[in-house]
Length: 420
Ligand code: GLV
Ligand code: MN
Ligand code: MN
Image 1 (cartoon, rainbow, N blue to C red):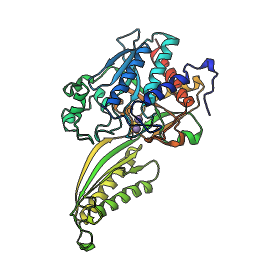
Image 2: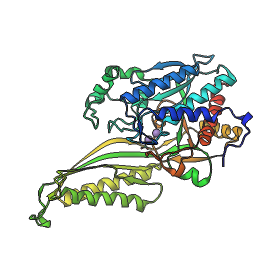
Image 3: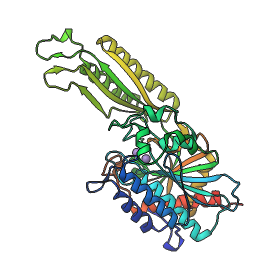
Image 4: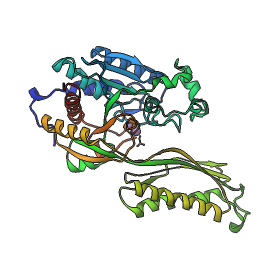
C-alpha cells in the first residue's frame, strides 16, 4: 500500500528526501550500502556540517549546542511560545545502515522546508534537531548523549569516566571536536512543547501489514547489562571437569538461559546477548573471564520487571553454583514510555488528511524520543523497513515510504505550529 493522494496534493517531494539520504550516507560509507559514523569522528563532523548546510539552505536559523547537537529553527510569530520540535540522530551502528536516525533528520528538514514554502511563518517556532549520539556504538554507555544533554540527564563525572571501545574518554572525544565537556549543562532545554521523531520501523510489522506508516503510541522499556564472570584459567586437558571454575561454562548457561526466558515469556519480551569477550581466548585454556552484554526489553512495565528479575536471579544462581565471581553492571535502563494521546491523535489525523495509510503500533527499539518525554509531549512516526532489517547495511526504506512518513510529519507540524 502506498501514498494515496495525487502528486498535486503532496507537500513532500520524494526525490528531495531520497537525495539527502544518499548524500548523507557518503559520510562514513561502509561497503556498498552501510554506514559507520561514530559520534565525534571526522566523518560525523562532516555529516553534521552537511546537515547544518541543508538547514541554512532551507531558510532555517542554525544553532549548535554544547554537545554538538545542531538545531535549525523556523521562527514563529510568537517567539514567547514554546517550540514544536522534530529530529533524530546522525550517528550509526558500526556498521549500520543509511536510514536509522538519518532519515528522521532529513525528513525533519524536508518537512519544515515544505511548510515554509507552502505556508510561510508558523505561529510557534518549529525546531529540527540533528542529535549527536543515540547508538552507543563508540562509547558503550553513551546512549542518547545528545538528547540526554537536552533533558539534563548527563551526570557531571560521565564525560571523564566514560571510555570508548577505542579507549578514548568522552571528554577527550568532545575536546577533539572543539567542545568543552564542562559546558554540557548549557545544552539543557525547557522550552520544548512537543517532540516528534520520524524513524524507520526497524521491524517487520508494517511490511507484514502492507502499510507504509506507523504511529507509535508506546516505546519499549529496556535494560542493558555487562555481565563479567570470573573463574580460574587452567589446563584444558589436565583439569577434571568437577574441579574447574570455568567462566565459559557459566556464561554458556546464563546466555542460553536468558534467551530461553524471553522465549518462554513470549512476545513482546526480547533478550539479546550481542557482545562476548573471552579471556584468555585460547583453544587449550579454560577461560578465566567471560564478559558479555545482555539487552532485555518489554513495552509492558510489569513484564519488563519480571524479565529482569528472572535474568538477575539466573545470573546469581549460576555464578554461585559454579563458584564464579560475578560483576553485573547496568549500562542503560529505561522503563517503557507512553506517547502523548493528543500528539498521537494529531499524527493520526494528519495521516488521514494526507491520504497516507497508517496504523498505531509499539516501538520495540528505543529512541531519543524517550528522553524528550522528560520535558515535552512526545510521539513518533515510523516508516516501513524492507524485510524488517535494521542495524545492518541491509537496512532499506523506499523513497515512496520515506516521503509518505515525511508527508505525515509535515502535516502534523502544520497542525501543531500553525494554529493561532
Ligand atoms: C536503538 O538503536 C535500539 O537499540 O533500540
Ligand atoms: Mn535510531
Ligand atoms: Mn539504532
